[in-house]
Length: 230
Length: 325
Image 1 (cartoon, rainbow over the protein chains, first blue to last red):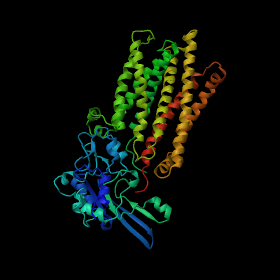
Image 2 (cartoon, chains in turn blue, brown):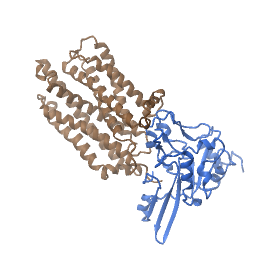
Image 3 (spheres, rainbow over the protein chains, first blue to last red):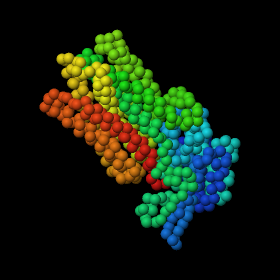
Image 4 (tube, helix red, strand yellow):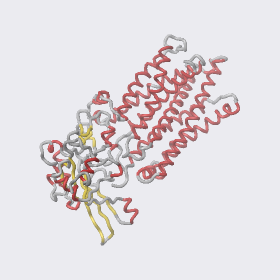
């Protein structure tokens, strides 16, 4: 059954799709069915990373839909997707933002970044912001200072419903790898071809165009300064 | 509506950088075309004005650009040097190097024309000719990269079009021609070198060179109209993000600014004016003459249109993003 010549496992397929030469490949699986929209991750992230007022590295969007009495409400936690093909890295003129060879995390060297904001515009997920204190661009880096010490990111640590599962998917025994093997997952804006490393279980992808098409009432609340969903 | 991250400094830079690069390319091309100024005094005069104009807007635009830098805003005046400590395939990195080379070369090129009695046989001639050969590819590079810079982002469907760079290049050349005509017109009016001071062949040469510039501008604007048409048509024929993004100029917040501010003021009116004076000469070999005031007005409209194009494109690209989630 495990014969690689006859059986293409989902893991094997995935390994071919993503860069296999990395010792580790950190990813996050978000089980939106377990998310209660408490914003504990938003707050934990802000305090852990000293995120300036008005900006956020991670946030939880609320999607309200339906016409009374058939209504639903779901949550969509957002963060940097740590893309395999990041649009931000290819446009950075100074090489300040880069994909880490050892684990695939997209990180920023704040000493080098000149704050040209090219990457902010190039990110299809709107996760980047200019830090008014340093003049450099910043974003979620899976709490690099924590994961390098073997501790999970602050948002994962604080999540009340255990909706966020973090791990190295190159390691088949990690919780994240197991979640990917046993669940149907989706990513955000897969048509952009960025190949995100943040996967969602049961995410509601409805938006205003869906509402227009179906006649179903949809209201999206981003809970961040940028009111329109990026 | 999404947030605006690149504001007026970037718009001003894209406009001035294109204008300066365009003026440089036109100057060097006219210079080389006229056998390094030997063939016609008028051509040398155009090349001279183009060369003197070119570095000024490019330097001013680049200067404006640092005000958009986050590092500059927090008082770190020189962190932008990091741009020049590396080179990669980012359009901004390549563009910065092109820009730095262009500024250097165009300053040298302008220097060779600086003296008011500069002429095609003086001691700078060999150097000037060599620089002119470098000015053409560098100028095209600078003008072209401003469009590639915006077009490189799939996340911005309005900009993510291969024809945007072409549009910016043509607009840069067109505003470059207009700026040369404008400055020459103003300088002559101020009495630097009155057009009627030329005698015999000289006077004809001036008229002839003015005709060539106006005819070139007419041709450039007609290509620009064509490119604008292709840009909008293909966007409209697409579905999804691009179609959604183009709506911002086809029935959104920037519609009137685009159609009136750019298409009518910057393209249609100037091309009609130029056609009125250029076509009789082009079709029936009649004498070319255009009143100063009309020439000035047409040039100013072209330049205003060039600015409007950059303004609308830069803002529209940021207001719109990918659709769906």
